[in-house]
Image 1 (spheres, rainbow, N blue to C red):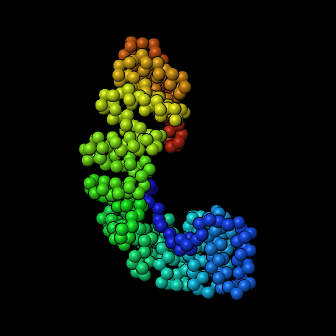
Image 2 (image 1 turned 180 degrees about the vertical axis):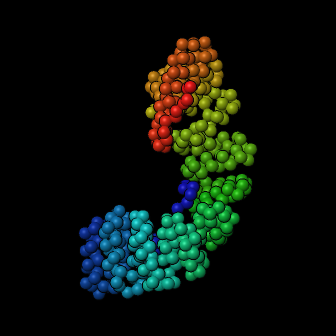
Length: 370
């Protein structure tokens, strides 16, 4: 579930389009045949639906060409074409053209909420939040129950840090929906209560959301984090483990579980999780370092030293590994190796300093030794 939340645009034609694409030749034949028949009045609707099919087939240009045909038609057809062309150009991130078609739709019908919604989305994409808010307010003046307008205003207030006002608009959507539950709205409400520090209510909404999106590992993880904030460590563990079961390569969940086991002094379990993580991402030294650190924690210095040496051979420029080798060899009194690894670390740090200096354009540091 997207944490930031994406703006919702209006595209009425796409809500009614057919769910299964047909071969293009058959589409064209059907439309042309109906155009020349007693039912020629239906051809316009079919042409519009043909544009939807092109979109479902990812043939954006054909959809655009089909819709552009209706730009000069009677107003009710032209406005639908303009709204949908605006929507397509929003998807293409061509904001200038999308705005142009949204403005065209507003000129044809100044009481069309969809046109204001698309204009508002364009302004949001340009980070012009005040203009976007005005457009969505205009849409709500025309249709006070507009899902898209309410949702996007809620997003704007959230971006502005006005969480109470944001919550007001998302709760209006809940009120309008009645018994229908909408995952994105529940997510935004849960997120807002979390931002307001109301952990109990945030948990309530996240758990409602989980009943709709049962396999969303990020939502399950978030519930675990909230239980931890609430002091419910066992529940926090349960939800983190469930998140791991669904998506076992999320590093933040793996780290949480391993920290939990280390805290409980069951370090061997942490090692098991880290070893599985290494198998899933063998090119990353991070988990190998964690395993070596775990062996050091349980007092198996020799195994730890052996692992750090192996890591150093594979990743000779890993500074964390060099620091661990210096520390372990100091403990064992291997001064020669302490000097060797110390010199390597010093060289690495100098190289890093040079790279940073080049990146920032600063002159080299000069020392006065006199």
